[in-house]
Image 1 (tube, one colour):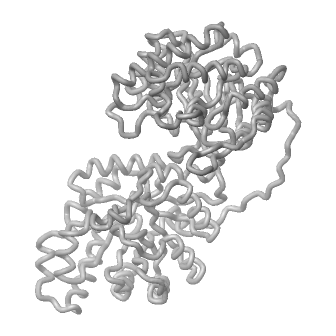
Image 2 (tube, rainbow, N blue to C red; image 1 turned 90 degrees about the vertical axis):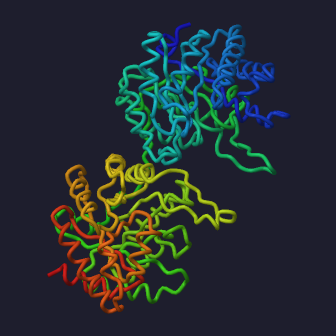
Image 3 (tube, helix red, strand yellow; image 1 turned 60 degrees about the vertical axis):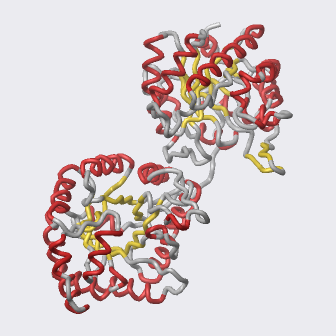
Length: 587
């Protein structure tokens, strides 16, 4: 039975449900990864395949979603998984799909090569149908698609992405954009969504799709059985089979050609779905009854900092460290002084050097409400997952804060790591992509995203590569590290030539000889020339501040031709020194 002919018949093709969660729920099933059971308990896996087939599934997936990093063992797991699935499917005359999960983030091979190695084993076992599922992005997909069609022209490749209820993957990429990119690949035969979201949310996502953008390629949708809850010490999905089946019928009627189940779906879910789908055919969404959803059209807010930059006006952003206690009076006095001196934005660091301070986003909201200044909060990838990041961003937008500086963040100091753990689920580039994608998923006013640029880095070519990646991810501009040396200034000029975004050149007033030594020896990304360090020897506080103002103004003037503004960093809350420098620059 050829799958393309089967799909052309108009009847939705029903897949099986979740092997992993169903295996884990069986007695003794949670003790090991279920893919290992292909070798250790093949009869258990065969029984699960048969249960889904007897329930009415017309396509099953091999038990090979996560085969691990040991390639020799992975090869044996794939071979055994193919043998078990093919034997189970033969009496039923159904399709068997080779199941590939996401490539490891830090694997020894690039994603495309990782998939190719697995595909070779599947092809050798006689499988020609492939599903690449639960993908957070499309890395490696084009390479796998080209390889498959070159090796086996009749191969069928289905690419399925995992999106949350807002339609965004865990890497911060819009599912709609991924679907369109995958459908544009000639060698990809079908595209869709699976996992993370329940049936209702995936139905809503499908209802918002323009299926004509898929170029006639079939759409696949395989939701979870609702959302997980913790019962005792195990995770359970409580979505009922009847509800799941009814929503799967709705999904099919809105254009899905391939449907099935992901996490939490059991043979009972698939049996009810098979019954409900009997006689149901795919219809054009345009022919379905209209489902009006009353909603108030969002009104975009103003972004004054964006407007100034777009108008070609030089801007001054000033960084002021947040307090380490709950006393904000001195901090807010500093903000008001900076506002009165003409600062266009006040930036607030996010727990600099990994030490806890008042939250940069909450302080930014306070700044906006109480002073009217445009805040530019720093947001790190440390200690937050995407849910926490989105929650903060929504709150910022509600408060009229529409500019953010996204950085990976400093790690927790070594001596604290026994009690406080650094959590980095993604880097700044992925966070930028996620924030950019929110513009179509819950934000009425898009954020203007800034990134960091280290002009003091020994390998500045690599910094430029990362900066270009940040621009591709959505960065509109960069705040640089302090420019104290001719080499840093040369790197800044090179950045102006190579980058598209706005650049705010970093200025850090050095206020003492001790401060200069500290910056050179203990602050990453800062480099102070030795001749500058020597100029501070023996100076009083007043003399050192005088020199700091002179050098800072000169550095700012030197970079004026290759920047769109300045990023002034306040040392030790010496706001008066910064306002003095600002006054010189505003003349």
